[in-house]
Amino acid sequence: MTKVLVIEDEAHLRENIVSILSFEGFDTLSAADGTVGIELAYKHVPDLVLCDIMMPRTDGYGVLLALRSEPATSMIPIIFLTAKAGREDFRYGMVLGADDYVTKPFTPEELLHAIETRLERQRLLEEEYHQTLKTLRLATGLALPLDLQTTLNSVMGHAGRLAADAPKLGPDQIESLSSAILEATRALHRRIENYLLFAQLEIVRLDPTRVIVLRNNRFEWPGALIEDLTRAEAARWGREADLQIAAVDASVSVTRENFAKIVQELVDNALRFSASGTPIQVSGSVEGDSYVLHITDGGSGISEETVYHVLNPPDFRTKIATLRDQPGLGLIIVQHLLQAHKGQFILTGKPGEGTKVRAVLPLYRDPSEP
Image 1 (cartoon, rainbow, N blue to C red):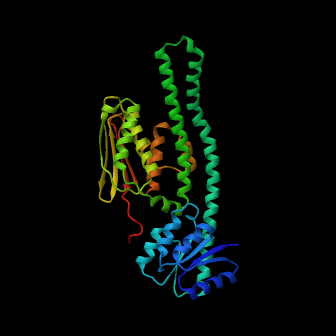
Image 2 (image 1 turned 90 degrees about the vertical axis):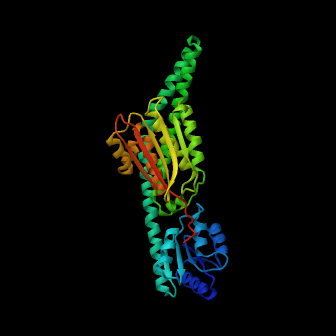
Image 3 (image 1 turned 30 degrees about the vertical axis):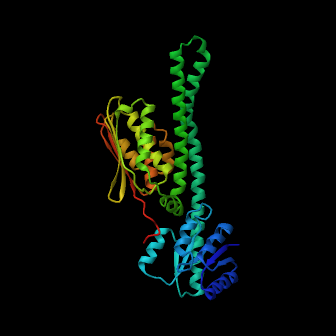
């Protein structure tokens, strides 16, 4: 039985709605204000929420933000019941993630039509979600072993030689093989991480509610993180002296984990494809309503084909296969992360002339402010 939560402070209207829904066969819950409504939603996880906007204690917008912030309730369709029919009110609610509006006064037919339409839309979204997830799992399962086997063979080869020839090897040779094993293991870990992250982003992309939740995140220390991660990556390559870093902090609309991944992949790409002794410039600055991570290297550059491939990714089934292409691996992940956070990726360069990248993310804006 479909469970509907009704949050409405006007007792007579709330009772009427509950009666209508019960008569139509819905399992109903009700709350007289937003605070109680949030508690009931967390406890019972309804299939749909009907919610008034103007209420004591917690208003409808507060209910919406609270439910969207919790994974268990983030995908529940929410229909606002409101006497506020202005365009700005509709726009603000939709930006926060409301699914529909029913304007007071309304007839039972109008209310039921809105509910049935939204539930049907939710059913279709879930069918698409599960079908795409099934296809994604199949495609990942086919591509993942082929790619990881190459790196794993490298680990096994170095480890096998170390085990077989250890008595004959000198300290320098043992150190060299150990370093090679460690580096190959790191590469294997990064590939696995990128595959899993790629799959996660594809799932998020299919669900508008998940996108809204993701974009409501806030990270306030991008400058400090840029400096820490860039120096750590450069130390791994023995290239601390090549860095030029200037990054400021700001409130950015991104998760810390995703921002860290963007920085790591772009810095690693700059280090990997430029020679030791050539400068790498890394900056993080506020430009208008955006935060911009800018990285320039004097390395081997990047072909127009690779730039197009990264910035114009094909169908996701094809993208799984293209993740085997090491030069574009990290950049494709960065592109997906920036798109998920409503950012922008600008990639330029020519073979032999180095590469310039700009990763642009929106500054954080409190969704509770109109």
